[in-house]
Length: 133
View 1 (cartoon, rainbow, N blue to C red):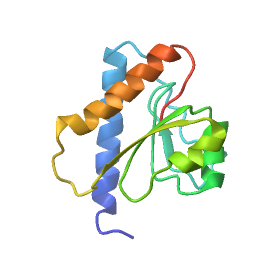
View 2: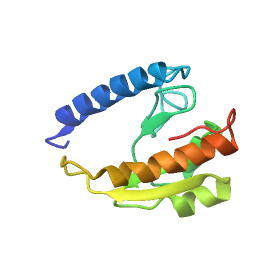
View 3: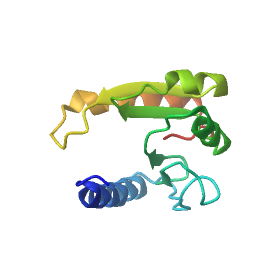
View 4: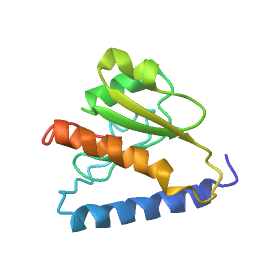
């Protein structure tokens, strides 16, 4: 277990709380239905709103299949270790690979702007459809 696991858990909860607040302020419906799958899933996926989820690394075709079954159509992939694009292509899932070091250091706003632009464009193209992770 990572020595940062407790800290990472706290940061994830804080991020989820702040994201829900932003979603509510933007007038988005929130759906806190929990994780994808049947509870025995290997995926770390938490729904923040009805269309936005946070998750960990996907890593395998089996996990990508689970993502597709959850109705996710777009992924903003921030992990530096692995580009999920080849796994997503057979499922028709669009991926923005936006790799960044998970080093607890401040990041430039441009890093996040790429994700905002990707998600905004997808929302315009599928205003009532797509789901994001």
